[in-house]
Image 1 (cartoon, rainbow, N blue to C red):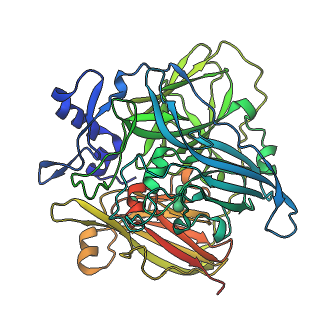
Image 2: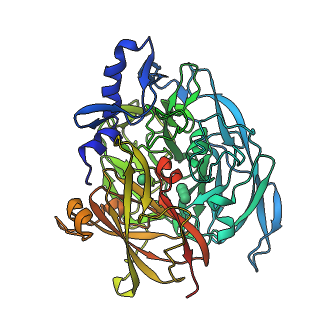
Image 3: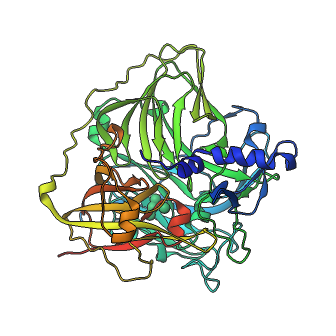
Length: 549
Ligand code: C2O
Ligand code: CU
């Protein structure tokens, strides 16, 4: 992957280390001072991008004292006529968004959060391919936001209700009216009923808030959960299941000394938006540094990076390899052996870890040098009858001969005079400008994502799945001067673990990332956007239309 030094330092958390040293003198016991993005080097001078604020230093917390919580399963509360003809009645779920308090660690005070059914992550949906469900998403949140809304952001103006919500199932092939269009938000006291046809292959999807201009705050507050789709093929593989299949929803947060979620603000009180947020506390299924007792056998981990902006590079402390068997949109063609797993925000990994022969060991799941959680291998367990098949499912490359249209789309960042980030745009266009991308239903397109910024951006398209063709470095100066792409290296194929069906792709800086997409699904309006939530909220999101041709 191509990471600039600035990007690497920012994303990798080294900036936090610099910052900790910088503020060390001011820090009292157990506290550190955090400023988002850490320090950007501007002309050699450090430039502070957000208000310094005291936060709990996670290094001061006891490791592995809380058992890993498992999100509850979403419960059916009845049956309703499915909007799709021929489906009869479909299971109906009523899911309420509520404010609640729960401690993120044994030694911390309860933290105010917003959760679906008052849990974070929300209840996990267990669904099957072609078995539709109906969900009523009820907004029962308070009228005031507890995180800093920026009313300068398009769609979050001061004359709108401060708390708004709309739910999107990320990766779901759904009609537009159930997709959770960002402008389809509703205020507390209201609800929306959506139907999910689940007409797609087994995959770990996830649901989260998508309200215009405040998605970053709503998800940071806790509005996210898993949505699993199963199918016959997956069931036939005899992968580890039931208690041996464990969801891991991982994200980073900052905590104030009183254990409350801290969301950073810029240096301008009238415009609190910050371009990126990196917390130093890593939360797994709602706890910091949890542990999980495992039997000495194979486990299947369904991992989601639910962070606003941070990528994770996950590895096991004993150096043992593991196997990635699936990505965003389901199973790979065959398992890929890995020593470390790179996951950008919104990406998912389906992973098999084999603890056989590791009786009595304590193995830490780490992000780079930092502890995330611990696996405690028990002395014994039931016999492991599960398998890790060499072949998982056939994945055919979408033929390039079928491409109807190729679009070249830029990712750009716009700075203020001080060199501070103001907003990012897709192809230079704002959210409210006319729709430019209008693929014909069932047609195949190649999208060239030309990243002109210094950051990697995880780009997500709603409703469709796609394949990554390649990534190729180009000269940004030539592009900015002559608007021509001059490649400066050969195209690099996707990593084996990315070579399946994706819905979110990492677009590296100074690189053209090519994806091939068949626009299957339903005609109508959807969105594509950067999944760094601070970018998404500030214009790095565009509508697109699937048209009937
Ligand atoms: Cu994960 Cu547009 O969303
Ligand atoms: Cu971005």
